[in-house]
Length: 48
Image 1: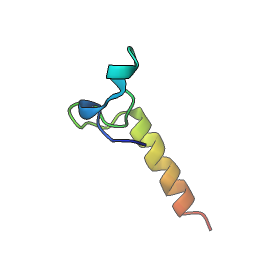
Image 2: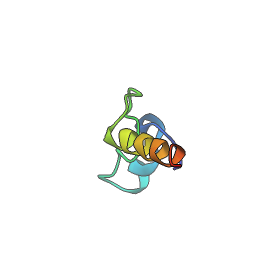
Image 3: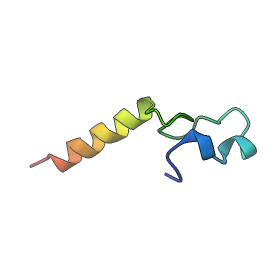
Image 4: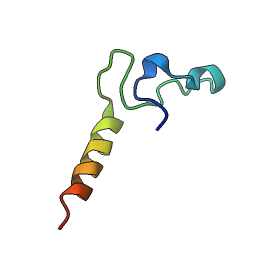
């Protein structure tokens, strides 16, 4: 992951139509990908 908020993402400059590539939106609100990443970390950290 190269960043966490779409507010400062370089993706729209180089890849038109792909501006929402990070896990937080421009208002620093979590997007669905954030919850997936968090759940994956929790799942792996709580394995016995």
